[in-house]
Structure formats: C-alpha cells, structure tokens
Length: 161
Picture 1: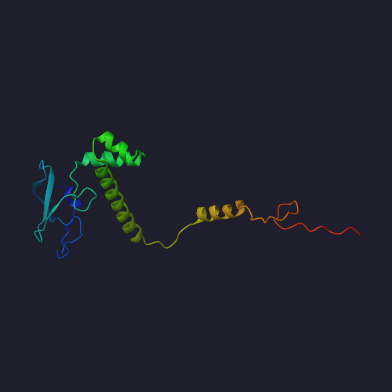
Picture 2: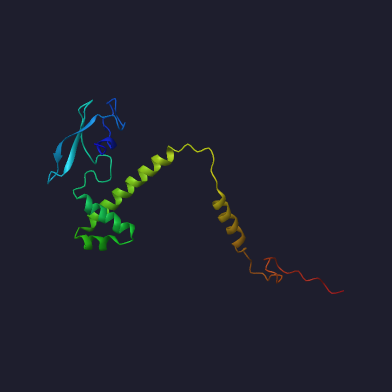
C-alpha cells in the first residue's frame, strides 16, 4: 500500500492532480508482454495510467533490471558498444536508455533546484578557486627582452654617467 502512496494522478483536470498520499490511486490490473507491470487508476477521475508514468522507465520495452544494468554500466564508464555487447542488446537501444535517463535526471534536478528557497549561499570554495587561478596565471609577455625579474616589461638600462 505504501508504494501506491508514491503515485499521483497525471490528469490535469483532476482535483488530486500531482498530489501524493491522497488515497485515490488503486491498482486496476496488469499490462505488458508478460503482464508484469501495474496499471493504476485514480478513484476521483477514473484516469488509467502505468505505474512508471513519471519515471525514465515509462514506454521502454525492457525489464527494469536490464535498464538498471545499462545505467550502472554507463555510470561506471563502460562504453555504449561494450554495454551493448555485455547485455546482448542493440547499441541504439543502449543509447536510447542512457539518453532518456539523462533527460529524466536533468528534469528532476532542475525542478529540485528551482524549488529551493535559499536565503544565503556560501561561495568560499568558488572564491578560493578563482583567487588562486589569478595568482597562478602566467602574465603575457611580448617578444621584447625583459628586465630579468619576469615582469614582462622591456628592460630600460640606466645610462652610465
């Protein structure tokens, strides 16, 4: 039952649209090739939807375990072709899963960052990095000779009187 509380109604006209833990989501049946995926519905508006409707898995014709393995290989730095060989999949399928997972992560991260209500931010590390980069920067020198101290200015000899 607690797993159902994580779902929400995707119907924008429903009173419970986007709200979790309202008790309006129930299992309607199973769907998919092997009938392993849950078909849910909203008790308020009657809208039916897949349990994975708001995830990166929705619409993919792969098992959740295969998708997990693809994402794991990508996170470990394994190439697309190598992942396709290891999991006996087409490289385009692996690319599609990685792209979809990346887009989903970007969407979730952007919505999380937008909802932050920050009043203060500490930028000490950023400032330290910028300050050090300015110190370490090598000054530009011209083709003219320097004064020996590395200032980049042409040396100006004082006349001997």
